[in-house]
Length: 355
Image (cartoon, rainbow, N blue to C red; front, side, top):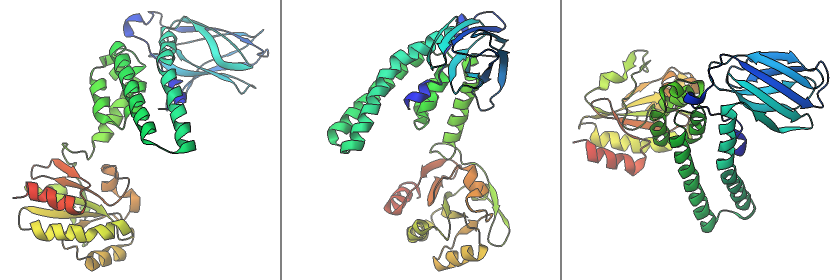
C-alpha cells in the first residue's frame, strides 16, 4: 500500500450518518475567481458529476445527494488544484486556498473525521515504509533491513486489525482491505466481519469481487467446468474426467519454459496413467500446425484442447492464468488439491494421492 492510496479512504459508521437526505456544501476558497465553475465528481470506476455551481467572491454552495458516503473530488475550472474528500448527506463546510488545496479545513462530515483519524494512524507507518524503500534502493537489501521490514509489516497488520475491528460498520474498511488482495484469507476474514450495508457498498463489492477472483483456481475450491475443442475439433469437457485425478496443464508450443517442463509431465503421465490419473492440456497457441507439431515432438499422448486464441484462450481467462507453464491438479471429486507442480514436486504429489 502506498501513501497516496490513503487519500482514497472514507469512513462513516451507519449509526452516525446524518438523517439528512441531501448534502449541502458551503465552500470558501481563497484565490478563486468569480464565475469559476466548481464541480463535485465521484471517484469510483464510473466517475459522475453530482453537483456543480459557480463561485462568487471565492464562495460557492453545492447541493445534491449520495446513496452512501462517497469518495469525491472538488474541481475548480481554470485551476489545476482539487480537493479530495468524503461527502455524505449532511451540511459540510470547506475552506481552502488555490495555492495549496492539499490541506483543506472540512467540518460537518463524520466520514471526513474518520478519514483524518485514518491518516493519524497510518501515515507514520507509510513514512517508515518509504524510508526503508529508499535505504533498500540506495544500499541494497540486508538481513537487518529485511527483518525491519517484516516487523513494520507486522505493525501495519496489527494496526489494520485494530482499525477494522473498531470500524467494521464503516465504509472506509473495504478500501483498507483492498490493500490486502494478495492475502485473500485475511481479506475474506475481515470482509465476513463487516456490517451488511458495508458489504453491499460500492467498495464492499470491490472487495467481494477481489475475493471471488482470487479463489478461482485456488487449492480447496471446485474446479470450474469448461468445454473446448480438441485437436480434431471435437468438444472436450473437464467433467468428462470426473472420477480420475487430472492435471489441467496450461502451455503453448511457443513457450520455452513449457517445452522444458514437458518431459517432466510426460514422465508423470507414464508413471501414473494406469493408476486413475491423466493429463488435459490446454494450449495458448494461435497456429494449429505449431500446436500439433509440438504435441508430437514432445510425445504428449494425452487429451489436448485449445481455441487457438493465444492469451485470450477462454479457459485461461476463466482460470485467470497470467503466465505459463501453469497447472492445477484436480481430484476425482472435482476439487483442486494442488497447483503449479513442477518436476519432482509433481511426482511426489501424485505418489501421495494416486493409489
